Image 1 (tube, rainbow, N blue to C red):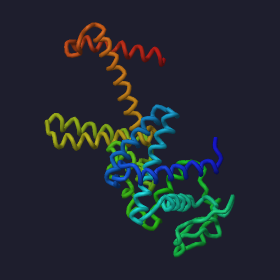
Image 2: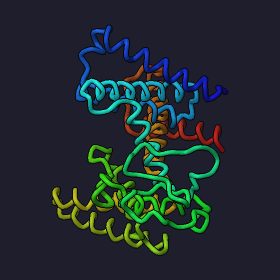
Image 3: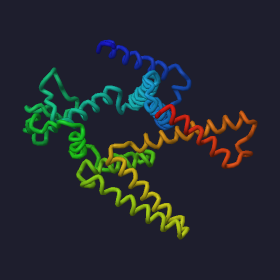
Image 4: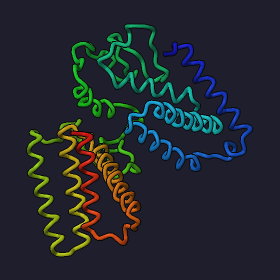
Length: 299
């Protein structure tokens, strides 16, 4: 692995390359915040694909693409004299230090904050200068688990200046609906709004399913759609309570369906048939073959 000096040099090289491209490449010169946005979304999803496959080579590659976009946006910000990459890095460092009050920032090196409204108090906590700077002993409230850190995360965020006005305000409106539902529920949990026993969620799931079935029997499309949303929301909530990622779970099923359907299509071609010419029974037989092969490979 590389030394800190080598990492900083590599990051500086990326900055230099991107700044030169902005000046000399016709495509880079015409880009704006708005024009880059779709590309950024695409790069983020490509990174997610690599993460799902645990493909380290492509994870590294796609992280580079996402990082290039971060650098590009910082260059655009500098051109408008609003911010640059140093502002981006310093703001993120200040935020992370502030959100970890159980870390003593007076220890293990020379630490500082860039925000003039912030300071490191005697207890080693990052605080706002106008607030009470006495603080608590970081060791007295030091969490032992990741879940304990998450429980205080939202409360700490509410203390930030220019932060989110409410607990759920930090959930991006443009998030895919499934992920958004998970994040909404998780943020509510962090302030204590959650089931006391995870097993109790199944009563809610069954309740929402019954309401959905009732509306479907009435063939009421509008209310059925609403009840379907409630049912899906409750299933996602159940997944969260059992520490299952519903987005990963659904993607695993997507990939499983693709593999099996591709098998059916390939076998149909071997028989000189089109899928449209096959009966449902014939396709089901091939589907079960594909399923059996997968089960044999993964007993």
